[in-house]
Length: 275
Image (cartoon, rainbow, N blue to C red; front, side, top):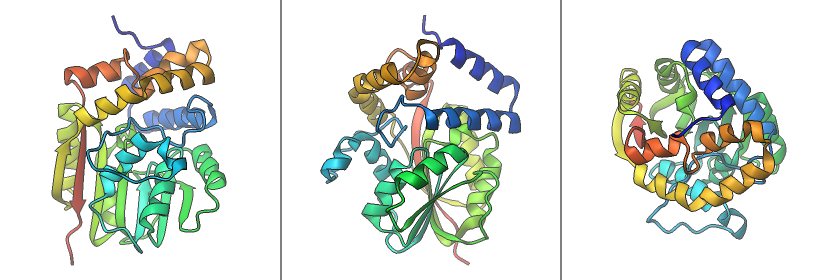
């Protein structure tokens, strides 16, 4: 039988019993811990990765993060980002924002994360990238003015949000008319339907949607041993199973849910109508 670690079971149970703002604060606490932990070693990413048929040329330094970078690239490669005002919601350890800022050269990429510890860590680590700025921010209650960004993207973060309707409304509000929103994350079938409805109800127009579960599973398989080794080295025994579950390593409920179809991984692109 597949079992969550004790900390993960407690956390999952409390999230079910304490939805809304309490759940948001628990996710914030969890990501604060992740920012301080060494379980990811020197990696600047926490996503599940993506195996891509498109050949992506990377620097020697970025090559070690290829699978993770490919997930980001898959999400935004069809968008016009060069010279634009871009927002990443849920920037995590900052690797995706760093690569996009360096590669696609937006005028400014603003990256927000609910964890102040993560935002501070990224600000220090990537301070040499002049068109990139990290700050603390709430996806469901952003502080930006209306019609601020040409492009917004969100990678494997929204499953933590307690109110997708609020997130969708905020994306619509801060996106410029004609601007585009790229989203990718995992959901069960009901969750996917609710997410799509939340985005479409704002007035956003769907221009692309696609399931990418197979490509994500392949990436999880390829990076499995490296993830396990990093988690083994960077965590204590009590918390280790929770990190393995979070990372989707083989044998955990998340990985098995992808395999049996209970969970799927999806991407979508939306556009705010022109005035």
